[in-house]
Image (tube, rainbow, N blue to C red; front, side):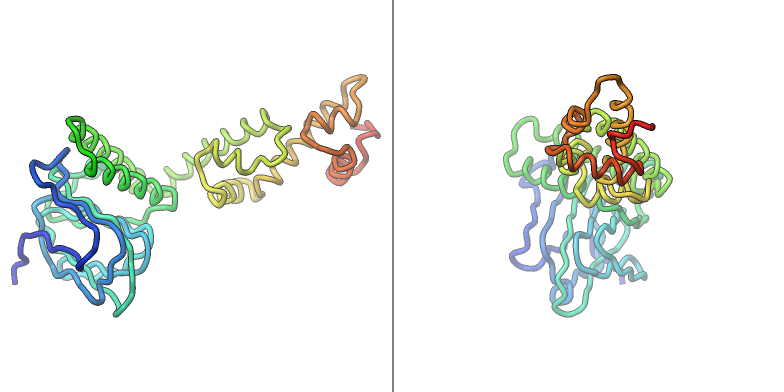
Length: 279
């Protein structure tokens, strides 16, 4: 049976948007929020545009042609306009996802034809970035003006860039993480006096606290706090090698409130107290 070409609207009350006039920036449809595809399945349909979907929670089943694919958070799907697809799920199982329909094909490096269903899994950072881009798309269509078509088209370009990065896989992610770690180490060297550096460093890098932990543990095997402590105590040796530099001055320079805390940390790391300037 040939699938109908139409937008099959989600369950009653589910947030979605259809342009009342010409689609701004080529945006044909937008949807978001929680779904119960076990109660309200989406039957196989084809669409006039290219569908982008991001699963945020749950494990709904994507039906694409004669295939059935279980998804999870971070699943990215791009379906061409000639791909019949739909959704199903376990009874009463909630899920959450984001949807865009675009009149133009994606620009993600690989050429996709109209019968392609492209499926990848994004990392947490890319998923969060796509969430933000969907929020910005919603905000733009909710307060449109003469600039909206340009803004929406620019948002699509950013979305495509995130999809392209996700498609490049671990090698690309490793290169980006190495650069970010280098930035982190440069920041720490300039801020050895910061007493609670983790939050400030995460903010500087634009990552979550968990993302910061992951970055350091995967690259160095250490937590960021430990990496900074070691950097401080190596710098302490250099400062103490200067004639006339006191332990108290060094402790304060490195952000310690009490010289005793510095002395204990220094002795534990170097094997002798800072007053013993054998290094």
